[in-house]
Amino acid sequence: MVDSTPRHQGFSLVEVLLIMVLLTMTILPFTLLISQNSQLVRGIYLQSTKSLFQANAGYQMDPLRPDYYTQFHDSTMTTTLTDSGGTIPYMVYVDTANSDVFKKTAYLYTYNNSTDAVSAPRTIHKIFQDTDIFRLRCGSSSALLDSSNQLWTGDGYAYDNSKKQPGYVTGTSGAAGSSIVDILNTSGVDDGLFQYYREGTGSTNVDYKFDVPNGDYLVTLYFSELNASVNGSAPNRRLMDIYIEGTLQNSSAYSPYETTGGTYKGNIQPFEVTVSDNVLHISIRRNASSNYDARISGITIQKRLIQG
Image: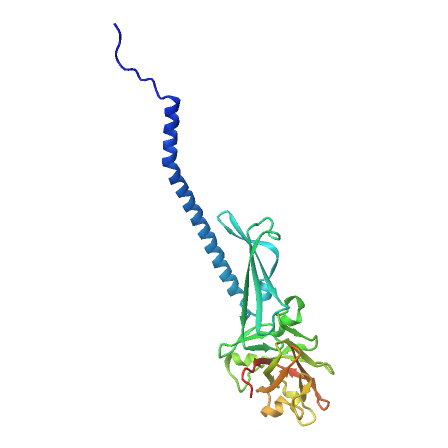
């Protein structure tokens, strides 16, 4: 008797291949979608991280910070920001040649290859800020915010070439000094504008040079007599000659003591000058009739935008 029950022969090779193709066509789009979304999210995350990093670097390199050049300069070109196994190599470079006391220029480089940052393709971001006034504390390496919340940069950075402020250079003359006494005609933090000074020695002048664009400037110099012993009867006086751009500015010898009527009083002397060689020169000199050396406590340089 013949068995007429149908028998299952299994899938033929052709049928198996057809099933695999159908499954692949069904699953592949989902796999690609998941992969694309993963890469897209990854790319957005990396780009967002980079953007945040660049914004932070820009803030840190704010030229109003007196230490931004030394704190945020990296010449290795291989420093990296790590993000979940990925790296963003970067370098920060401050352009000292093309900066002046009013415009500080910095460059932030980011690279796409952490093992070969020097020759890898890079993105360059130029960061710079402008200001119309520059304030300097003479004889101090510390910055100071005055009572009007204005930043004063300490000149101590200029006396170490490795920490020189871009756009700001000085001569090598002058020793730093201070006398932390109460300045009678100021109060609070403003005392610190007169308690420090840069002083010449004997025939040595106190010289400053500043890189500035050519033009007209209001230069204000800060002085105070901090030693009572030098201000007795004549000729025991501190007398100074003030030269700006090589021209004597005071018609008679300047004395902070005689100008203010006593010791421990701050005094400012404003001068209008024109710069034609891209360098502002200031020289405080001991007058021939003085028994004591020249001193200066502060300098501000302001652009004169309106001609009078």
